Figure 1 (cartoon, rainbow, N blue to C red):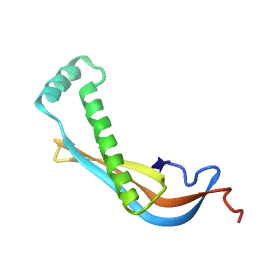
Figure 2: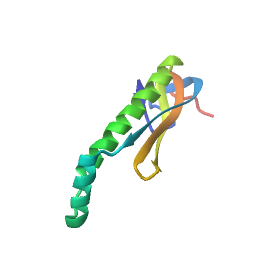
Figure 3: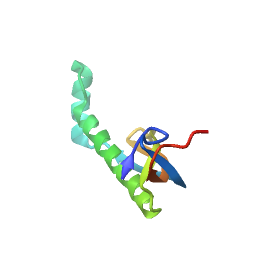
Amino acid sequence: MLTSTLDGVPGYRVVEHLGLVQGSTVRTKHLGRDIMASVKELVGGELRGYTELLNEAREEAVARMCAAAEELGADAILSIRFGAANIGGKAAEILVYGTAVRLSPGATPSP
C-alpha cells in the first residue's frame, strides 16, 4: 500500500476517491517504563521506553489504516495526518487518517 502525506503521487493520477480511512490505538505505560521515566526526570535525557511505545503505537495505527484502505480496494492513501491524545493521564491514543484512492499511471491532468 502506497502511503503519502502528499495530495498526489508524481507520475500517477487519482482515478477514484474511496473516502476517509483511519486507524488508531490506545497504549498505556507500564510500571518499568514509569520507574525509568521518573529517574530520567531527575537527570534529564530521552525517555527511550516512551519513544519505543509511541513508535509501536504509530506502526499499529498505520497498519490498521492500511487494512481499512485495502478493504475498500485502494491502491494508496494520500494526505496522511497523525494525531495524538492523552487519555486519563495514563494512556495515549495515536490516530492516523488519510484519503483512500485508486491510482493510474500518468500525469495529473492540467486544469
